Length: 321
Image 1 (cartoon, rainbow, N blue to C red):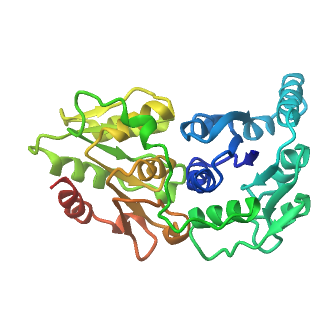
Image 2 (image 1 turned 180 degrees about the vertical axis):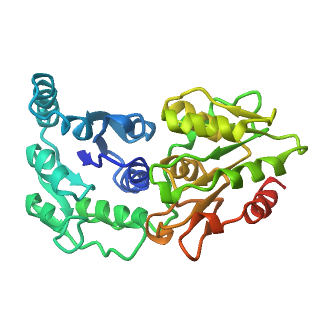
Image 3 (image 1 turned 90 degrees about the horizontal axis):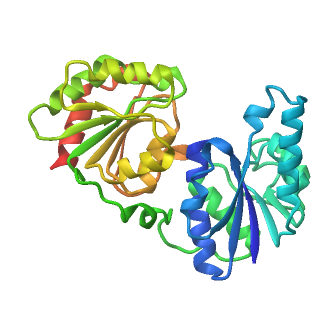
């Protein structure tokens, strides 16, 4: 039984789809998946044992120059890749008009997705052959698990969500395993950033306990922020730019993580790493990180600066002990 998944972005959304694959794998032992995903996140699906083929797509990059010769060639190559096989089912887990129109519509097989009232963008449902009711007022992980169970006609297992990627990373333990913390300070939206002065106060509170701190980054702005946060602390390391898989190994071997609302926070949750996440405007009950060892600190007024370093330090000391 071969299924095509369409879940292109964002990083957190892609990661939160993984437990649905685990349910399917446990219920239907012969099932295998191919997965269409944005090129920036193409490493992630291959970590799951039920995924055979990853088909990268680049809608974000293509739309900047849609009709150029190079982009037209890339689009044709992608179209050939998704039409190469006729699938037993196609599950559009994205629920957007662009994913339905530019990807799902091209596929060969019975197309499944959320119905008109359940999809993120209602008109996307017009592309699907089978439309399923998925109530919106439940966490994204559960919504994905329900969508897969309805699309593939099985009863959703009554077990905790299992991302099934820990074994992929557990084989490689670093020499400094569990001797450092990871601070995920970078996120895309400005109103989700925690003030740098609060990060530095928290970093200062770690002095003397024998732990180091690692700071990842992805863009030049994030690199500059990481350098500002590390300035003057000899136990803080600004990491080199890394792939998602390399960062996953860093997270796996850490003692604990402190994060803002970012895709890497969802990755830490999928790896069952102790993770204190700071939320401002995000509705964490519907789309926040989901898993074991997860602590959420939420600002009541939606402003990140009201989450003090002392509040975070108190929770972090509990985790470290």
